[in-house]
Length: 135
Ligand SMILES: [Mg+2]
Image 1 (tube, protein in one colour):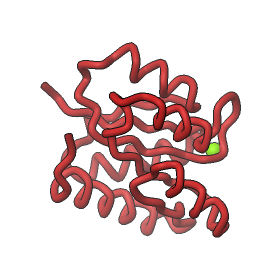
Image 2 (cartoon, helix red, strand yellow):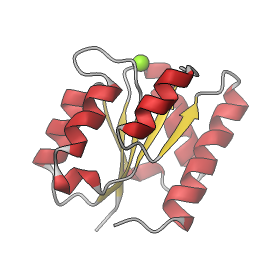
Image 3 (spheres, rainbow, N blue to C red):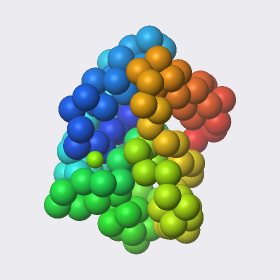
Image 4 (cartoon, rainbow, N blue to C red):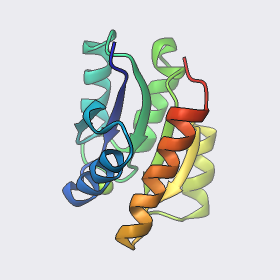
């Protein structure tokens, strides 16, 4: 079974950067993208056997934002155990605190510099895919 990473992100440029980062790593083919929290929940509930073991979550999105997604995730035992990395342009202290309170497993501010953005994705991959044990 191919393990997947789910990207919940509404910015096409950021999606491109994230995919480019994962392609530079070793898991370029295992990425699925949706554009808001509601689509993320739908994808997760429609694909319980996909073996998704990491979610990258934007905060600012239409329809259902990242905080709302985290709240729904906490209500669902099947989703609670999938690690979520918040990846956002917000560096507000309130957002960081709220994300962790709502169960985010880490919080990364999107670097503005493209090279640093790629490096951040590679670091996330190194830690969450190759080092950390996940369910
Ligand atoms: Mg956004």
